[in-house]
Image (tube, rainbow, N blue to C red):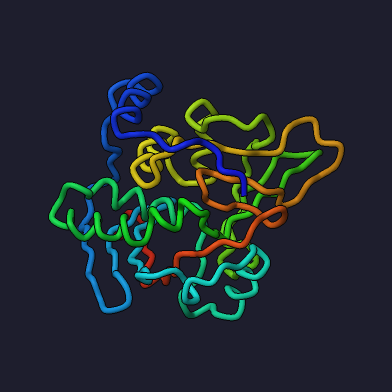
Length: 248
C-alpha cells in the first residue's frame, strides 16, 4: 500500500499544527466516567463516545487472529463467522476509541495509555489497519460511507466524497464526521499523536464514468476499502455495552 505522508519529528509536528490549525488544543468529549482495566489478554475501556452513543469495549492486547494479515474480503468473512466474538470494527468506532485515549493521555491512566500506544496502536497503524467501513461512490446520487459492512448492525451515512485526494483538515467537516465520527481538527491531532503522520485522504476523483462501489480509500493507514488493498492486521474489538448519550 502506498505510504501517504512522511513521518515528522515532534517539533515539526508542533510547528505544522500551529500553521494549519492555530494553537492546538485537546479535543473534548462530554464528561463521562473513563476507565481502562488491563487483563491478561485484553483491555476493557469504558466511556468511549461515538455517534451519540457511549460504549464499553474490550480490546485485545495483540492484533486479531494472532497477528494474521487478511485482505478486506477475508476480514469480512471472518466477521460474519464470528459475530459474538472479537471483530474488525468500523473506522468510526476505532477512531473514537483512539480519540478517547488521546483525550485522557495525561490523566490517571497515562502510563497504560502510553503502553497501549507503543505496543499496539502505533505498530499496526504504521503498517495499515483493517476496518469494517466501506465506500459506495455513486454517479447519480450522493455517495455513502457504510460502517460494519456485511454485518447485522450495518449503518449507511450519506456524504459527498468524490474529489481530489488531499489533507483531511482542508476538506469539508462532514467527511471526517462520516468516516471517523469527529471534527477535522480532532482527526489531525489524534493521528499525529498515534503515527507521527498528517491526516490524508485518498479518494475517487470526479467525474466518474460509472458508479464505483467500495473503491480503496486510505486515511492515515486506516484501510477503508474492498478492492486494490493489501492484506492488513486488525484490532480485535468486542462491544460490551452501547447506550445512548442521554442514558449514560
